[in-house]
Image 1 (cartoon, one colour):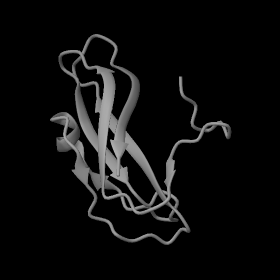
Image 2 (cartoon, helix red, strand yellow; image 1 turned 90 degrees about the vertical axis):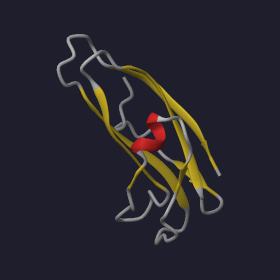
Image 3 (cartoon, helix red, strand yellow; image 1 turned 180 degrees about the vertical axis):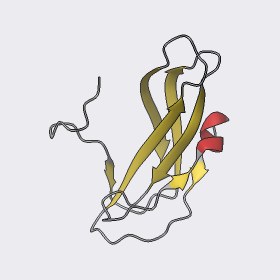
Image 4 (cartoon, one colour; image 1 turned 120 degrees about the vertical axis):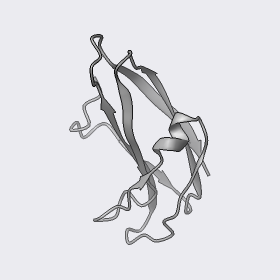
Length: 104
């Protein structure tokens, strides 16, 4: 299990410049009755109040997402994601083994 409270685990990607788009891929098993409820991304994660954008539809169809946010208050740009899965009526365990993707 990935423990984000552990200070040795870095949960964001710090970048040299403003990211324009992101591709999120999920290594997952969603049994019948479960679903991806939402996938949110931000390109200003280091800000006090990051701008979270909904890219759920792009993730579901394996497409890139174009960021609409062009502002940051922190010194650096950083990408992070926030995934919410609805177990719904599924009788089996929902699994998220990891995530990947790309950004530019």
